[in-house]
Image (cartoon, rainbow, N blue to C red; front, side, top):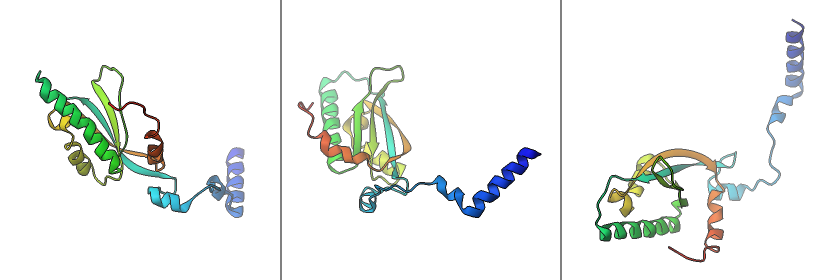
Length: 157
C-alpha cells in the first residue's frame, strides 16, 4: 500500500510540473532542410524496401545466357543507383539458406512497385536469382554514403 502511495505521489508531481515531457530530447544538431531533402520523419527515419536475393530456379548450363544475365544484373544495379532507387547493394557470404545478396530500395512507394523494379534485372527475369522483399524502417541519412562510395573503388566488376 505504501508503494502505491509513493507511485501516485511521484506521478502527480511529474504531471504537475510537466516532467513527463522531458523523456523526449530535442536534437541541437537538427537540420530541417536536410531532413526534408532526405525524406526523414521526426526521428530521422524513413521507409525502404529490403530485398534479399537468393538462388533462382534456372539450372541451365547455357554459358552465354548466364553471362548475359549477370552482366545485365550489374548494369541494372548501376542504373538503379544512378536513378536513386538503389542505395545499398552487395553479395552475401556463402550460407545454407541460398541467400546471394541484398538490395535496399529507396523512394519506392509500394511493394508492387518494388517487385516491378526487380523484374527489370535480367538475372531475376531469367530466374537465376529470386528474391524476398520486406518493408524496412531505417535512417533517412543512409543514401548520403553513396557519393563517398564512388570515390573508393579501384576496380569495377
